Length: 469
Image (cartoon, rainbow, N blue to C red; front, side, top):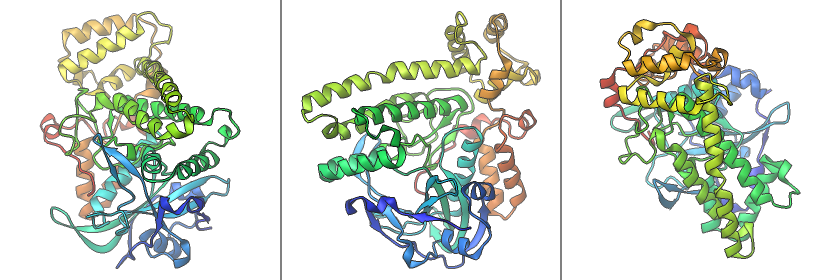
């Protein structure tokens, strides 16, 4: 079986998309196939000529591929956007009846490309494949990568790169920016059509509700809080948390300027374009609240016919973010430290630990692994007296080590390690890259604790990630 296509999105008003064919690859060559994911989607066999053609951009004319229109607040500034280098092949329906978007990234220009060439470098697509599959292994809602295929085209960035196309899948690419586009560039009837489409496709349980806007907003807010809490659990920094990169399914996507924190510091930023720390590790909850506020503003015409009443109700709904976040984040941190929900002084305990870790620049992943498994004491032989005191206090509390092992990975995609894997892959040394992928599929297995040690401080100090590569 190959893909089973449908295109429900194309039944929306035409203002939401432009049909567009991907640019064919000159000389398509498979670099990576995600055979596990293909089998999950019911797509066989992975190496067929038909699949190679489809996922490299050489698609049949009757496929009706398209690029989505959307808007977004980028670093706080509102602008019209759209899929500049992403082309949707359609929605694949699995044998179980599940629906997933399948999209090509780097398959050429679209109507929304502006000054871009619509292309992608092999290195950047390998990186997205690696990070998205790492997020899957970590148990975080994410887009998935199906394949990376060299196109045979050259892509000019800071130097000439091999061009590549990434195929990725998600439950949906609907984002806050899609609703912003409908609210500010389209008619109210278009916004209503988008809202009804969202309910029918993604949240059918809300259909028939007496308060569907409130119910949808609260459901998405809970999903996004859960996702960002998981980011914080593993030290992930998205790097470009614009409203156009906030999916209403709760899935993480767009792995351009993202990275993982090593030494604990809430101000950590690795994005080359985030010069003021807007999307720093410790600011991600604030930005999520800001993004959700922008989404609710776009929904005001559907919330109530009276604008004043709509605004009043919106403020009440947004007021629930703080308590929901504090509850979710506190529960997550108690689990990371193995403390029971009703354990006295549990919150004070994990807050003290984070303070000590920040003061002494302790490695985020290694510190929690050390607590969970209690070995490799050599790495902590120079442990500070304040941490020793904290350990004495913590060990006197009822600690659930099994819970800690569920919540604390022993490995993450370390920045330096990721770059080394990409260097090797670009040189055709594939074995190490595949070994890395296998390890990232089991990040909670202690056997992988020694796979990738923390990056050297001097490496992280000068490390930057980029958008649009």
